[in-house]
Length: 392
Ligand code: PLP
Image 1 (tube, rainbow, N blue to C red):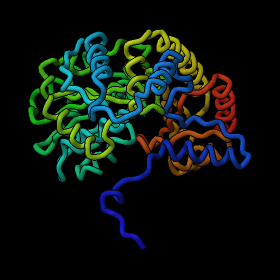
Image 2 (cartoon, rainbow, N blue to C red):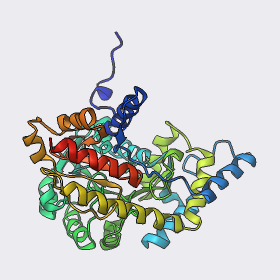
Image 3 (cartoon, rainbow, N blue to C red):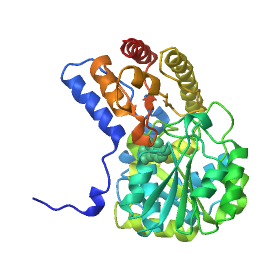
Image 4 (cartoon, rainbow, N blue to C red):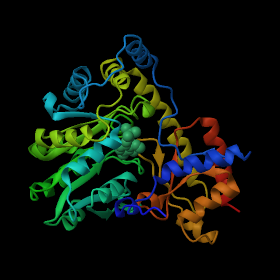
């Protein structure tokens, strides 16, 4: 049989994509399943963005571009950082990639050596630890439970940093918790990071715009002195409902961005030319779409959190944004004699016809992640089913 690399054997396939695939397979077999696994908005990409891409095709803009992105898109990203975040970047400090996922992948490959440590707060986006492992480095997980609103404290960060720490990852608003750090909380973390000058900081701002509680800030807004060693990661996937177009971007120190570009030049080359034109239209165009989408997510959030907390054994915090909630289900597990959140998720899909992602996939055992990026009708059906199945 074929012998596989140690590298690939150190990781697992994305569990969120696996849940979506499982729900699809059960549906194909005739089962009625409500899927709450999705990691993408259920809205269509706005029409002016689609039209820009159609025109790009018709004009023959269908060839290789510069590896790091077209000048037009990079200028749009530069203007976005200035306008929305008050951050200044030269064009050679910006790299466009095939999704935010590739942005982080490039970063890990460009920065990490075997044995290097990466501090990742839990609950975390599933891909951070595995991409760190693929780079041969070591994820160091710092746990933040529900009692601290899933956010780490400066003292916890300080205790996790060592002489081997090369990278600290912060994701706010967070997938899967929906929580955002306040400016004061970020300043507290920044205070610690100042004392560890060797540590690079990655701020994953992918959900920046999907936020209804408190304003958005990232660590550079409160600690501008960390600019020389901070990489900002963002993309158009979530804000403009463009997950399939695969455009993400990174901005940071020129030397690091150049190294990330070299990694990309030997893997995918440029992101799709047509998608880059679409992303440029998204960033430069009219932004009204976002507010409408966020309003819908907020209404669904209020409904879902209310219904979840009425189910015995389920405890769900209100979130600040994103389209996820992460209820604690430990009491429900105990009452139903289910060993863990994986068993509970299995029970919910088999007995209740509702697909959720086990929290342990995100470093949050005892919880499940529900995506609210689906219609109110689906959410009503799902909440009805969860209430019935969990009250048995
Ligand atoms: N970062 C976070 C926190 C995410 O949740 C995701 C998508 O799920 C990404 C980055 C990457 O998004 P994409 O590669 O689709 O642009």
